[in-house]
Length: 179
Length: 356
Picture (cartoon, each protein chain N blue to C red):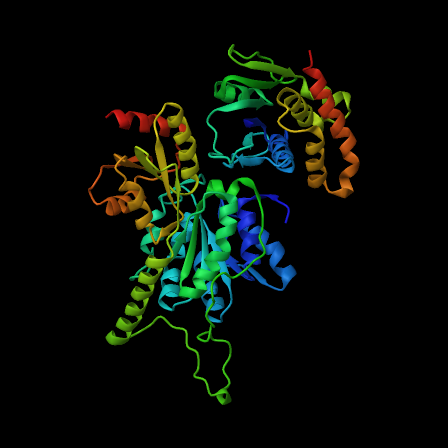
């Protein structure tokens, strides 16, 4: 198994975090993983992205120009990375704030209303988790439990009370792409 | 011990601490700030000393002071900051002091960019400062390897009384990968630091320790240089390290180090799918350069040429040419600055070069 992924969005949308959670989850499941952030002069409101590889085999290049999956949380990310999806790959679009459709026809496209899902859960911060839920549903690259273990590690025991909310967001994101 | 997901910079800092380094002097610069940040949090907890100096020049001279008193000490920086440290590194080499310097290379010349680059190969391997000296230079290509090399870096520094440089790049520094910290163990017999200036008691009967790199008399300076050169020869003979990947029966040997070597591995896999056998020669010590290892791969009858891939205008390619010595063609692929080539671009170059 090999998944190459690019997570992209506005700074502050939590794309680096969901990429990291996937990397942790993969590691917990005994996979080889790498997480590489774009680290230019980034700022809140600017664009941010990270490349995440999850693989059974040792990872050759952690630097991705093309990826099996692209996760676009905002329009500039879709514009920049739609062409980077490998043929037959998957493109995840945050349809709450991206009002255009994908132009590629050789890939699978998932429209995930991340912000709407988060608003329904009364916490706009979990929009990224809804997207991660959809990604996990479509790829099975890692188990939801492993992602929640990773989140618990990142949050620490003091903030463990936030786990159920994040779990709900992941499940709602997954449900949103089930046919 | 369980694996941890860590940024390269943080992992390098933790590995240094586990190797017994309790002193860090530095000055901030992207993309290696996670090293001083980590050190500033951890060193006070274990009774060590973290100090943010007023400049890189000050930091490297604080390293000189700590090393002169026999401590395991390190500093880290990125290209422009490493340039500022060169005078100090020459003094450390001249005074035969062990220390570790980490360079998370970024684009140059000048202030350049903050993106990864390999433009500091010449500076690192040729000495960088004035005078006839070489630091030992280790070039990891993964976070785990950077961790594993840290222990050895401090041991090598102590055994050979020389500065050791870890030459990585922004990708290794900023990337998170799973790492395992093995129980620190000295695999080498470490000499006693009886030369260290640790405080002198006139009644002790031993001579006063003087740490110095000034030898006014021609003969005395000659003695130092002879000692250094014969030590470098021992290092050349015993301390080279390289990875050979897929080289047996290969048609082309690609030479690359650090992050680029990993991208080359992906390129090699692409070529393999098109039925072309390409091997990788990856020096882990770039000084001393693993000459025997490269010769062994290049001397195979199946090998037609070497291609060196770097994020530079072509620096390591000169060492490759020295080893191959005109016996086979040596080509270069890469760009100076901060442009990281993709696996597809490298594979395309290899396939085209094969037809040419």
